[in-house]
Each structure stands twice: as C-alpha cells, then as structure tokens.
Length: 186
Image 1 (cartoon, rainbow, N blue to C red):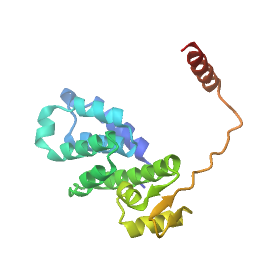
Image 2 (image 1 turned 60 degrees about the vertical axis):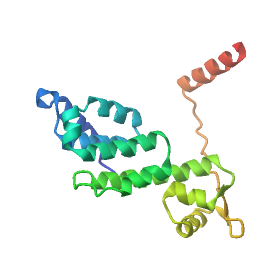
Image 3 (image 1 turned 135 degrees about the vertical axis):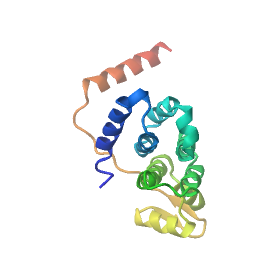
Image 4 (image 1 turned 135 degrees about the horizontal axis):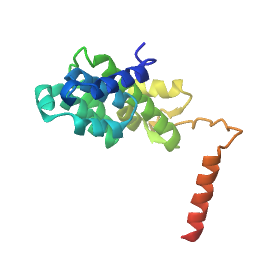
C-alpha cells in the first residue's frame, strides 16, 4: 500500500533527483516528490523543491503548477481552497493516488485541528474544513463521539486524551528550562 511505503518512495525520488543527468530530473520525479511532500505535510521541503524545479519543466507540465497551487493553499491553511484545488483537476496516473492521499491527510489534520482547538464550532464550518456536506459531517461528528446540537447546528468536539509519557527527554527539559528563564528575563 502506498501509505505504508511513502517514506521509502520519497527517499528513492530524492535520490533520483540528486543523481539526475545534467541536474534535472524528469517531470514525473518532481510531480511525485512534490505530491509526497504534501502527503507528509512537509510544506518547507515542498517550497524548496518548487524553487529547484527548472522553469522549463514547470512550463512543459502544467500539472506541476496545479500541485503547487494545492501546496500554496495548504500553506495558508485555507481548507476549502485546498479541496477545490484537489478536486478541480483530473490528476494523471503518475500522481492520482498521491493526491487522493493528500486529500485524506488534509481532512484528517482538519479533524484533529477541530478536536484540539474548539470547544464548540458550527457544523457548517466543520463541513467546510473537511469537504463534506453538512449531513455527512454531522454523522461523522456523532461517530467520533462529538455532541451535535440539532437545533443550533453546533458541534462540541471531544478533545483527544493525551497519554502521558513517563519519560521526558533531556532536550525537552532543557527547552522548558530555557523557555522559563527567557520568560523571567523578559
């Protein structure tokens, strides 16, 4: 399954880019690597890859620009625009499965964001952030165990329980101490 092998595929594509003759890989390598970075929500690497892709390759393959449009909307956290950009294109076989995975991952991150950030949110906003119609979004919320008020159309997400880890690394302790000392100095 692609989802399980995505890191291996990314490493292989990065190697192909590095070893490409004349320093320019094929457009398929660029397309797939850019799509993988979006799957991984690695927007910084996506941005640097976009800057490395030669303009000639960008002009020859408009699908690269369409993938980049998705990345730009992801960068801005504009969920409705991300979904519009993902569904407005008939993706080639080279990236279709990856772009479907991008859509799944964006939806999953939106649900996590809602659960962690909101004590109540309009059902219509949930639908917009997940690219689901209101009825499906409401059913999905109920399935997750969230309270959905039928009369007000408000959703009350249940914050996921964080399992405490018994061990705090030295780096984490040092970061917290540094942050605390910095707070006291200011």
